[in-house]
Amino acid sequence: MIDKLTILWTSGDEDIAINMVFMYVIKSNTNKWWKECNLITWGPSNKLLLQSKELQDLLREAMDLGVKVFACRRCAERYGIVEQLEDLNIEVIYTGEPFTEYLKDESCRVITI
Image 1 (cartoon, rainbow, N blue to C red):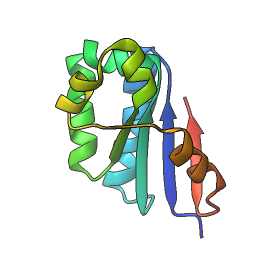
Image 2 (cartoon, rainbow, N blue to C red):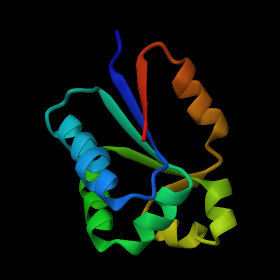
Image 3 (cartoon, helix red, strand yellow):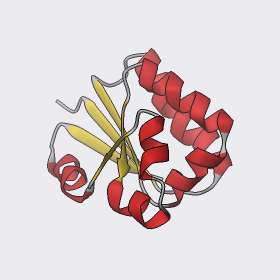
Image 4 (cartoon, one colour):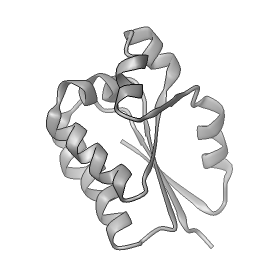
């Protein structure tokens, strides 16, 4: 049974973040469409998240609903923003291997944005 969702968010576009990424992940958890929802921020999305209070509010809402949020440590290190992401209660990890596991997991769907 496919009951897990992982969203890989790489876009630096705020409109996409508000009207797709967070809209869907919040509604998914509110309506219990998936047993588990994960959000991985990777690349430009990490920088965008730190620049927008609205996105930070949506992030907190998603996390309060049970969405697990991870940030790519390598990207965060390159941008010099590891501590700022951790201050948002995001788990900053090397995401290559966990993301590969999500892709291989037959009970998981992966969306990349």
